[in-house]
Image (cartoon, rainbow, N blue to C red):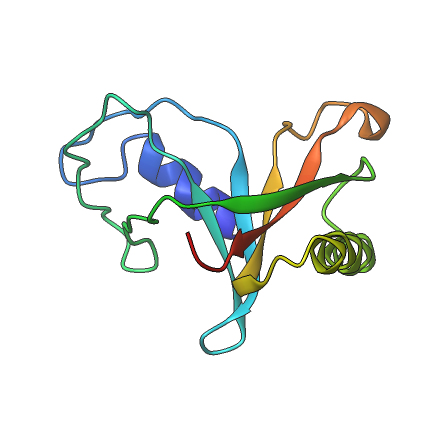
Length: 131
């Protein structure tokens, strides 16, 4: 799975064999590019020179900062139905404030698998167009 590929990278599966602290959230984007889902970890702020991943399926990217609208949604594991409902709610909220979304939604998951579902934190994010 995508999670295990990323976990191997931060567990030393990189050019320097360096262990990297796991951070939250874990980001997911659905159907990117060739229709595949992508998963991303955020590297620690102090890491200014990240090692190259050993696995070709893992890549490093910088996501530019910006202004985002964010909606926290129902606790639980990632589920497409809940994600779609949360995205609709966020888009409706943005429309009511005359904010235009730019790009694809990103979903943020904050909790490890052993946290009971009713305590989990999930968010959907949309970049706000303009400044």
